[in-house]
Image 1 (cartoon, rainbow, N blue to C red):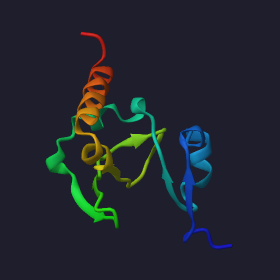
Image 2 (cartoon, rainbow, N blue to C red):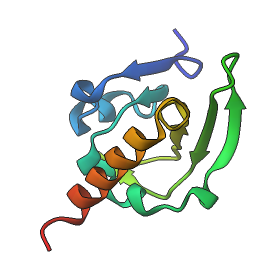
Image 3 (cartoon, rainbow, N blue to C red):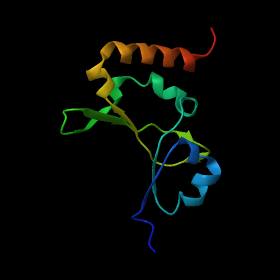
Image 4 (cartoon, helix red, strand yellow):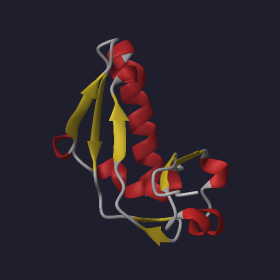
Length: 108
């Protein structure tokens, strides 16, 4: 079977270095990461994100492509930011973002 056209979709529990290294050269991968794996992304300004698409519910998705080594492997990847929470509840999004920034900056 030719796996070059296969896309593996995995959750945080399955994207460890040993698991990813088994398939990284064989197929495309879509997965989620933990806050700890991408602390520096909290500091990427929104101006660095580009419009990717808007779905049927008028929810916009933006993405940035940072140079990042995640889970011990380095490969082209993008980080998508969907504006669902911002549109539905801006105050909740701001509070969540502030908590996340504090968490990633560590103790003062």
